[in-house]
Image (cartoon, rainbow, N blue to C red; front, top):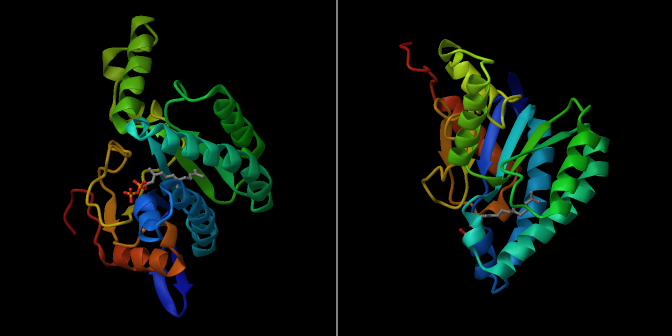
Length: 242
Ligand code: FPP
């Protein structure tokens, strides 16, 4: 979709995925505890949703907590879980006001019961919303997601519900947590790291990557537009020749 942004015609990606990195460094620079950085990171998420909606992006997917993040200190993990608790509750009213649908992807197993319940409430309360389709990855790992998908498919095979030739790329996509979402057009990673860290490995096969040194809590509309401008310079060929 083309859109005029401050006098500039930009092709807007339909689906943007974000690896929100740098909360810890943002706090450290200010001599504040790491969890302060995560709270600011949560504010940056709300801002990113508003900006994505204003830009005409239809799907925004963010990496909030990986299956590997449990290795952090108990204090930090507890702090992040408390930020999720607050976010999951506060988001219901705000999302409904903004017609935003929220989905949570990742492994539910291993998360505190009350958080699983709050996730379900938020997803159900916003299920009818047709504006920005916002997805949060919590306790998410791409390899874990693929492993769970393989198990689901193997189970159907075992029950004779499908044949070997039914196992196609499309079937695998349909068994991932992201089954309702198109593949990301653009992946943004903040804070200067050049890795994809087990985020949507199957889904980003043809995605354009944009890396920026900006720390996640500082990510604003100007940075968002810079990422889209970069995306506009890329020529997507999907393996073909143009
Ligand atoms: C990366 O920064 C950030 C995380 C692993 C956590 C992201 C979590 C939030 C933004 C909290 C809020 C989320 C929601 C959905 C409300 P880092 O800690 O790895 O930063 P560093 O690399 O500078 O240490």
